[in-house]
Length: 356
Length: 260
Image 1 (spheres, rainbow over the protein chains, first blue to last red):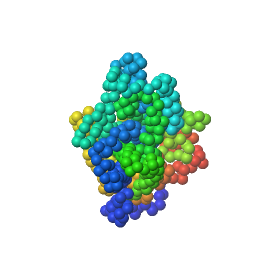
Image 2 (spheres, helix red, strand yellow):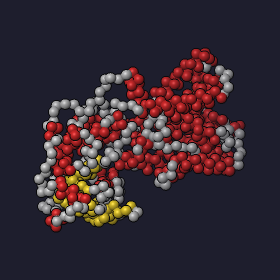
Image 3 (cartoon, each protein chain N blue to C red):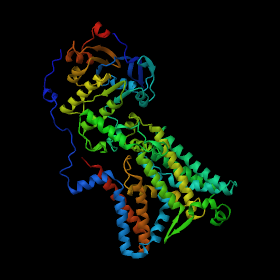
Image 4 (cartoon, chains in turn orange, cyan):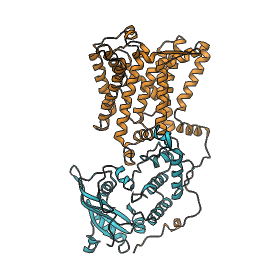
């Protein structure tokens, strides 16, 4: 009884033809670069990093281009590098965490105060600091995932809460480096240095590098990592295609809290002392977001790689040390970093327009 | 009716605040058939489909699969029972590759230590499987299975979504407007695929506004109106005009249509 007009008959017999092939021809040079960057998003910051090192190396000579200076940069960026690794995870899920720096400081204070105020063995105090960081991360995650509050608001509030709790709990007392060295050297464990030729590494630097590599592996090659990207890309689609969105978000925020705890431990190693008024508490969040953005991770989530953030942190470190060695006003560093941020986002927008 | 329905729902209700999306709705899918679901916008088709695929949990009512009562708390629940759905939005992550999307939520882990301890994915197995399924589908020739989905055209994305459902659906496949975004030629491939899947013995629920497509492939047509099943009609005994009249309320169903 169907009285269909037979307009579709011509396509009912399948002719031998190819459908929807991806033509690789007619590609300009710019287009090919665009595609390459689309598939490897960490290439842009890597190129910027290498160029910056080469330019400073030319201008400053062996003073800058030496194993000592190169590893000094690593030591200077270790705290921001660890925080940027954490920030990358949140930003990949299309969130943001403004509380990372403050949380790192509070975790370091807990490690110090638990040892010195309550006489808990340093090993357990460090574990308590890491556990506390994870718990605060879980709170952030729960508010974002279950109560459905915007991550910016949740972590803006948490930043203030954690920072205030930090001053209240510590009574704004610094634990001096020599006290820690004498009574609880384990707290400074990540500050342990070792020489390698002219290069100086600390365990904190090694921890940063291992952390970035482990996270890069997990994000690229495990189901969990794919889920993090899918949730950041489109949480609804991810849920419909079988991803446990709540579980993924919780795991990310808890892991971020844990990494902030690690950053707190790295801070003790780096500074020797435990100081509740460390600047990381106030600017750590902005520093880590800067590294992530320069590293090419999209603030809209789902795009970018954690290696990029690491390169982003190193770029900032190279600029800071290079300009300082060149005797420039430190404001030039901030000016150039501002330019880099805008440039990075511009490149990100351009890459997204890629079409096959 | 000679056989029992493979997927059956009785008295489903779902309310969103003051809006009743499902009003004591019944549903039957017979083994090996293509059942089309038609209805006006806002009739509650999507909610019905989501209830059957686990994306919406009905306030009350029973769903049974193969005669056994089931309740789906999530899309993954429904999937583990062999019900696969292609949503209208396709539910794909644009920045991830075709292979990643095919296996989202059911990734294959590598053999041995790398898989069990380090949770490494077996990319090659997933890529080969995806390539094979897309080739079976004949909807497109994919050169690079690692291409992000966002670089595909609308029709190609639809093809990937349908391939994903066809590859994993063992009991029921639900297609929500599978040809809405496609050109004439690509629609044709999807319709052929639907007939292919039925030939493999898997029943299909097809939601579509395209009457010629519905009348061409469907065995029975479920007419949805005002949150419930109005009637089920046989496309061989009704015209498209009848179906449209029923679903818009211009015509009341006759008693035997109600019984069908």
